Length: 154
Image 1 (tube, rainbow, N blue to C red):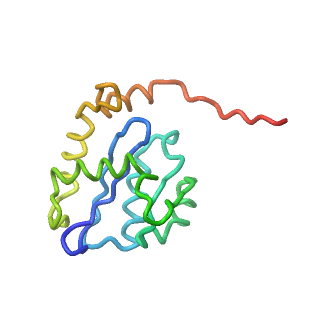
Image 2 (spheres, rainbow, N blue to C red):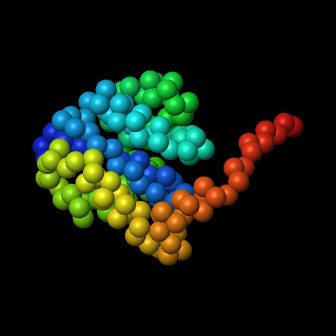
């Protein structure tokens, strides 16, 4: 959220690789704007990555059913006041404060600038990834054959 909660950037962080995508929310962060921004960004992902989305309790995801219908993604909501349930995302939001300090008017940043910032974050080695970058981790993940889902019965 930007200055006086008038502007925002949505963050999508892939859990295993910490790969980050920033969603430009021009002008507002209403549920419809967030839905449209998320849908446009999610559609750029390989299908094997677009399985679930975990969100906080904000009203900006009031259109979550439409996102699920359009993408087949299951959407989960964290418990109120439980940011640790989205730890990777919260950590990424902290890293974003290096680029966009509290009180910044986020609406002045173009989609191109957000892509530059996401690229810098994705090219930054992470201790939690054994010293490789999120971009390298994502490349490794995508080069692995997709594991089939095996249902078991007893």
